[in-house]
Amino acid sequence: MVAIKQTFQRVLMLCLFIFVAACSEEAKQEINTDPVTFKAGDECIVCGMLVTEWPGTKGQSINKQTGETLKFCSTTDLFSWWLQPENKTVKAQIYVHDSAKIDWANPSDEHLIDGRDAWYVVGSDLIGAMGPTLVSFAEEADALELAAKRGGRVLRFDDIDLYVLQEIGQAGHKYAEDHGKQIRESMGVSHSEDEAE
Image (cartoon, rainbow, N blue to C red; front, side):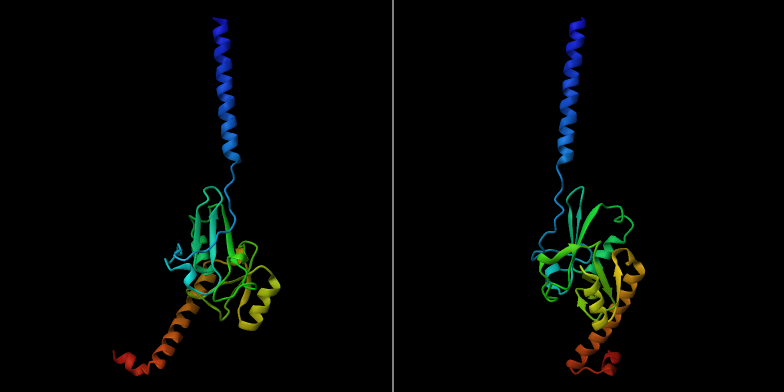
């Protein structure tokens, strides 16, 4: 009986050892959180617009636990998603374009940088996917240069909150109003004709 009990204990210990080793091996498998390429047909998780069809800096979030990748047509939409309370707990690697190294009309994915380390210009005259946007940079000097040339102020990742997004939204309404007037004027439609309709 003692021999059976000892054999049972050894088998149990062996099974426990195998289980712990398997769990350790599974835990060692890391999720790849390197930035991914934006492809034709990728939709922005916030607004549904095609990401590559629009100018300006874009963003992506890669969940460090699941590998789920979310893509955004603009840095503004990235922050609109990130600032939602349920997303603040996501362990995510966040990427944005370095505007100092991209062609604004067609940003290259070679120049994606860590979004938390980036510098952002809010209030410039650059237009992104949704109108006025946050312009991201790897270097503070580049951000300060843009702000001096094209308006705006420089912020860090943690400085961007719902008030900043509201400011961008208000600038977007003004941009849409002005752009609408330009389109109407180019079509020969006067303001009084708009009101008559």
